[in-house]
Amino acid sequence: MPPSFYTLIEMSFPEDRKRVAIEAPGRSVGRASWTFNELSSAVARAASLIAGLALKRGDRVAVQVEKSPEALFIYLACLRGGFVFLPMNTAYRMDEVDYLIGNAEPALIVCDPAREEETRHMAARHGAPHVLTLDAQGRGSFPEAAAKVRDAVPPVACASTDLAAILYTSGTTGKPKGAMLSHGNLAANGLALRDSWRFTADDLLLHALPIFHAHGLFVACHCALLSGARMIWLEKFDRAEVLSHLPRATVFMGVPTFYTRLLAGDDFNARNAAHMRLFTSGSAPLLAETFEEFKTRTGKAILERYGMTETGMNTSNPYDGERRAGTVGFPLPEVEVRVMSEEGHPLKQGEIGGLQVRGPNVFSGYWRMPEKTAEEFADGGWFKTGDVAMIDADGYVHLVGRAKDLIISGGFNVYPKEIETLIDEMPEVEESAIVGVPHKDFGEAGVAVVILRKGAALDEAALIARLKEKIANYKVPKRAFFVDVLPRNTMGKVQKNLLRDTYRDACA
Ligand code: AMP
Image 1 (cartoon, rainbow, N blue to C red):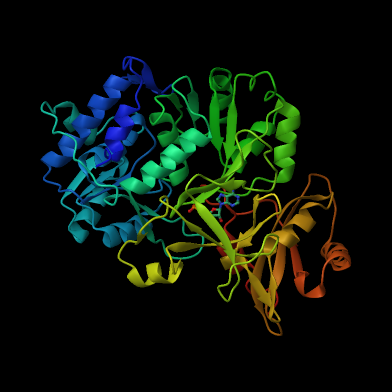
Image 2: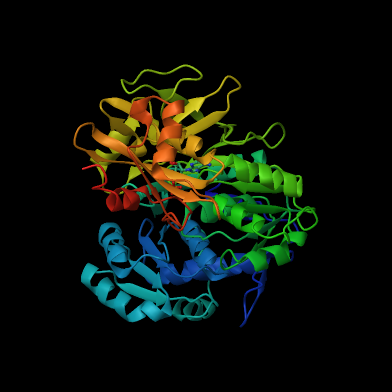
């Protein structure tokens, strides 16, 4: 039997376990760095504490806390002890948490001390027996109790099919669904990324992503832990903080917004990025313009990759070889991708259709939603990503939009990305989003929501007239609105559902 995922992580630690694994420069009290030895015993104590609360293998541990090294140790403790980790977005309001707790029925909830009272009421309502606390500085009843643990229980040998985590999908498309990820899913994807992106124990990952999401928790942490690399652990993305640590780091992972923020001032340049060997981007589309500007400014090409909660990472631009702006690269080792027509036939290179993926990274289904799970899989274990894509003649995958975003106007399919790209190319435009809204004649019609560049002028009629010159009438949005900001979720994705609501009556 292969080693369980947590054993594999510990086996990947450097021979010299006195090397630093995590630095937390934001720490104002207590410990601010952990060696691999210290990380390992902190995880063992956390796992033993949870086991001591009589949680059994497979029981859920729901966590809604600020980012801290101790929060990462709770995740690792779940892997070590066979418990199922359930991270929750720190921005969730109590109602949203309530839904997840009711759905997942955790045996332990770890929350911020500021929310302890309301969390206890909610836990009682849902029959969750234990509530412990943890704050951003590593204080709270969880670490206090963990520090008192003397006899660490041995790691549990988890099989690759055992459930490791439930991550609720970001919900840009409806009620949150709990994606069930196994130890095998996480191990396969972590190893594929570590090797594809050439991680070694000499790396220093500057970690500024949230850890309630697959990007910061799995992609970033697994690459570092499975190679014995060091992490600089920032509580959040803070431009000045990132710039101050960048000269020492070798790898940085971001959502596109991180990169536009870095580029927003001249103090980000080739000099402070000189030591970096890799910048990666994902979770939302990286504009070609950002990619180019970054390259001009630093001489480095951002490596864009594509994945999702349900599958981990599926494709990546190459480490060696051309990183192409506007594409998400090639399938990762052992991952298969295909583009399918609406009737369920495989499409050829260059044709646009629904993207499906298959591989050891793909989740086993949505928690307690067998019907929804069955709907999302095609025969042969292919997962329907809901993304609309095209594979070009060189094999690069291009994301064209999300199936959910697809607008059907007068019976014709309109892919928002195509129109957004045309609008974004207009010199006056900073960024745009196209959403479908009800239309009395066509059923649905596209509406453009546009941010103009500072000082630029463009009106609705001119924008529409220009588009009419370039694309078929049915693709041209019926209305255009100009705004200062587009609503985004914490991962930087434009919340098209909110735009759909705002402009619902625009074409009625
Ligand atoms: P989440 O489950 O929150 O990670 O969201 C997954 C979705 O984010 C995918 O289905 C894509 O629609 C989108 N996404 C992830 N990476 C990229 C990327 N590099 N470019 C465009 N969209 C992306």
